[in-house]
Length: 215
Image 1: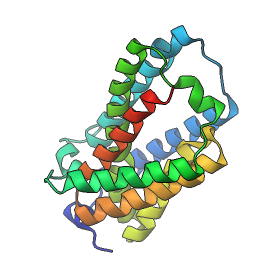
Image 2 (image 1 turned 90 degrees about the vertical axis):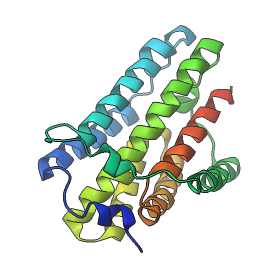
Image 3 (image 1 turned 120 degrees about the vertical axis):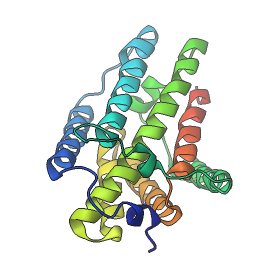
Image 4 (image 1 turned 45 degrees about the vertical axis):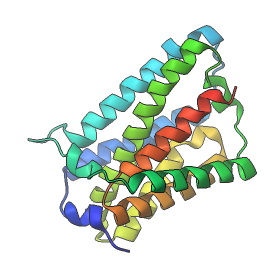
């Protein structure tokens, strides 16, 4: 496996405790989320779910790219955008949509937070952009680089980030975890081969944004 992204950042971009703290947060939030599935009245989605989630994504971006470092590594982690990123993103999106149509089935927890009104759909688009960007930066960017440095193996880093990505979506059930682990593996391979997160960010944002029109 070629590793353009990891080779551009061959060393740790943060100390070990910085990554350990992030992994602990991911696992803790997953555990809490899988143990609770609160029902939300329609009027509470924006204030109770969308806005807090956007704030969390911004915090995650800051944590992996700048917190406790002398400079930001955001640009290095994201990589350079080229025209080829668009067809790659479209191909990835088509793959995800096809798999979801065949095997996917949204559970009650996922359906509860989907937007149903015009204002909710507008804020959901902002949510899709923030989540798509932040999750790709965290998992296919920061974690791949950090885990590669820890394990000395790009393959191991890609697999481990996929497992963590699946764990982060534990509240959506075992089936969703398995599918998301597969998506994360494919996205991870694309990211390291392209040396850029742009294709996976574009795909992730598009897929999440389309969810606004499921209800």
